[in-house]
Image (tube, rainbow, N blue to C red; front, side, top):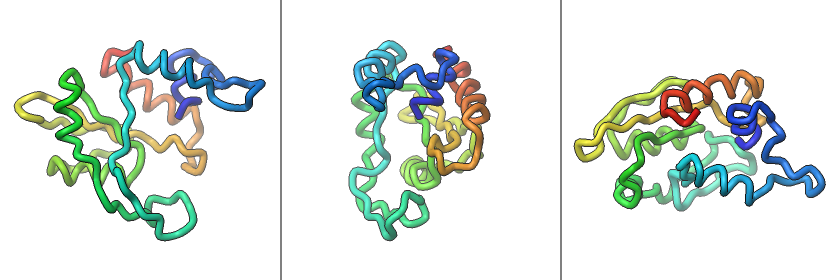
Length: 148
């Protein structure tokens, strides 16, 4: 995900990488997210892996996150973004939404407030799409949200 963000916002997929430490630069990431007003949270607070891999197919949501309660705490939020099938399904169930296609969004009302649910390509290296193509979809979303 951070390589996509670096590419989209700074034209450099290594922007957030601390090369000597071979890790992402946490301080730079936090500063960036705060400046842009981007929050991160999981759609489930408890999950169970049914097989020893990262596939959503073998992921059971035991306790979904109460997204409406979360939105009450951040009233300035105008969009939610999911990057995986399971996260999208979990969120759509809470709001009774039709699932958008990857790279697209669905509009909905949350307590009379217009919102968007964006479904973006997975940032996982296991998702078979070139980083540049993933970044192109993210760029459109961030332009729509006036963050670029």
